[in-house]
Amino acid sequence: MSEVTAAKRPPEPDWLAMTAEELVAYREAENRFRASSAVRAVTGDPDPGAAIGWQEVALPGRELPVRVYRPCPGRDGRGADRAGLPLVLHVHGGGFVGTAVQSDWVNSHLAAQLPAVVVSVEHRLLDARTPLSAAVDDGWDVLQHVVRHAAQWGIDPTRTAVFGESCGALINALAAIRARDVSLRLRAQVLVNPAVDVTGTMLEHASVTQHAHSPTLAVPVLQLFQRLAVPPGTDPRALSPLYADNLNGLAPALVVVPTHDPVADHGRRYAERLRAAGTPARLTEYPGAGHAFLSMPGVAQQAEAARAEILDFLRGSLAASAQASG
Image 1 (cartoon, helix red, strand yellow):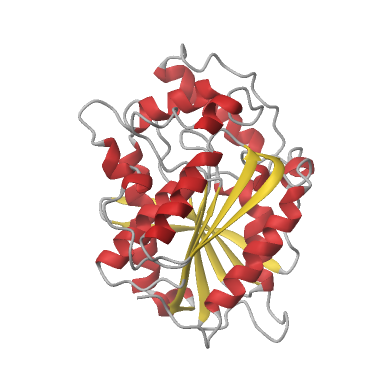
Image 2 (image 1 turned 90 degrees about the horizontal axis):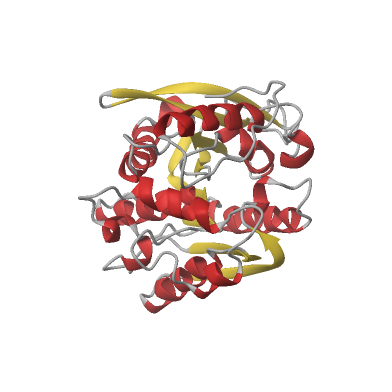
C-alpha cells in the first residue's frame, strides 16, 4: 500500500537475471516512485470531485488494502455517503509491480463523473512465492466481498462493473467469467491493454514481435511476468482468458487496445473470441499509444480520449434503467 510521497525512480534492472531478493527491492522502490508527487506530471492529478482513501478488506485468511474513490459531498447533489451508487471494481496493471495510486487519474474521474464508488484492489504482487493465481483470487474475493456487503459500501450491487489494465485486465476478465458461473450479475467489463494469454503462445502473437522493444513493455518484462505467473505445475490455460472454454453470457466488454503495444494482439483476439461466443464486445484501438498509456496522461495524449470513452461506456452500462447482463 502506497501513499503519495517524494521518491526517485530506481534504475531498470536486468529483468531475466535478477534474483528474487532483487525483484522485491526493485518493486518496493518502483512503487514508492509511482506513488510519489514527482510522478504526477506523468500519471496525472486526481479529479478534485472525488474523495480518495485506503481501506482494509477482511478476506478469508488475509486482509487486503483497497483504494476507494467516492464522489465528494454535494457534487451534483450526490453526497459521498449517498447509498446506492454503482460499483466499479478496478485492478491496476503491473503484475509483479504496481500500486492502485498509479491509476488515481482515471479512477477518481470515474468516481466523480459517473458518479460511482470505485474500489481498486491492491492485490498481492507476483514473485517467486506468489503466482498469478493469488492475484486473481484477490480480485475475485474483493469483488464478492463488496457486493455481499453492499449496504456497508453504499453501493447498488445490481449496478456493478469490473475494470482492469494489463495484468489487471486479465484478473478482471477471469472475474467476469467466475461471476457468470455463480450468477453474480455484472453490467460491464472494461479491459485496457489486456494481457490475456500466459500460455506458451503468449509471446508468439505478431504484435509482440512488432513491438518487442516498446519503452513501456519490453519482451524481457513479459518473459519475467510469464515465469512468475505460471510456475511449474500450474495450468496456464486456466489463467488465460483468451483460451477459456466458454465466453458466452459474459458482461458486455469494452476492450481498449493501444496499437504500439506488444500485447495488442491479445486484446484483439480476445474481443474476437467474445464476439464469436455471443458476448457483446466493443474493440477500440488508439493509434500510436503504447502499453499502460491510460496511466500516463502527462505523456500519452491518447489517454484523455480513452478515459472519456470508458466513462461514456460505463455511464450507459451502469445507468439505473440499463439491463443487467445475465
